[in-house]
Length: 325
Ligand SMILES: NC(=O)C1=CN([C@@H]2O[C@H](COP(=O)(O)OP(=O)(O)OC[C@H]3O[C@@H](n4cnc5c(N)ncnc54)[C@H](OP(=O)(O)O)[C@@H]3O)[C@@H](O)[C@H]2O)C=CC1
Ligand SMILES: CCCCCCCCCCCCCCCC(=O)[C@@H](N)CO
Image (cartoon, rainbow, N blue to C red; front, side, top):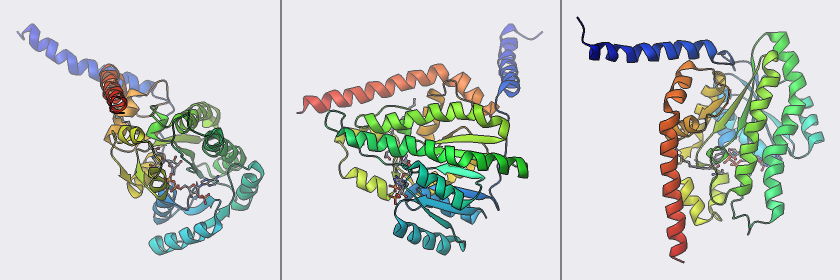
């Protein structure tokens, strides 16, 4: 007869299997594949950094790409770069996302969209006390309100297009790891990025019946023209704390983002720390993957412990930094 110990050992995989089966049954929304070949992918902030890398990656996979930003000259240069890299032309749309009329007009010009990537973003790091409120408002207006304007303008067209083609559509929103955890010097920026999560979680429930699937991307520091600008004035503590998660290349972030949105992942982490952070901050977000759900369920307690460890480290750094002054 098998020893009770052996029986107990057998019970563990059995429990895991039952848990996995339960999660497979429960996980919602249901899994989906979103094709991009020959479909209209509109990327805001597509003239620089992550957005430009995304535009190239999507064009290389046979998508019809439109890029939207304010500066027409930089947009033209970007289309040249995309043409050179992929052989495909991208359509250029000039608009400031802060202006709802300009956004509506640009989307009208662009025609119905299959995949909307709200990637435009601005970041001016500074302690709240020192930051001009106009700068804080600037970040909220571009990062948050701009995304509202884009989705409002694109949704009617996306809905009818998804109905006509019978193909799933995607709205992908660029957040940041600073949209999952607060970081020194990012009061306004983090607020704008955290807010996008509330928008995305609610929106997914509103658009699921129309076969539209929402994704959020959470990159760490990423080498882009925007980051180079940011680093000129970033408080030292911001750089140290943000440095807890390594720096990525825009192309690598773009690849993660594109792969994730095609799988309809609601939360798209970009590196190992990002995956840990996603498990630690899963909350009540939608989850299509039973495998990821299993990690979230099993990892919850442990990842909270790791998170407490990170905070210990950050608060020690802040304390030492002040002690040296
Ligand atoms: N780089 C990083 O470390 C990280 C970046 N992110 C996020 O990724 C996104 C892209 O960042 P990154 O590639 O570094 O940024 P860049 O500064 O390199 O590019 C920003 C893009 O957004 C456009 N843009 C800015 N403001 C507006 C506006 N008001 N209306 C329309 N377009 C606008 C810019 O064009 P133009 O100025 O001509 O309008 C440009 O194309 C942002 O949302 C950012 O918050 C997230 C995590 C890390
Ligand atoms: C429990 C497990 C924890 C895992 C590690 C967590 C590390 C978090 C670091 C936060 C980094 C924030 C970078 C923001 C980059 C950005 O958005 C700016 N460059 C502006 O563009």
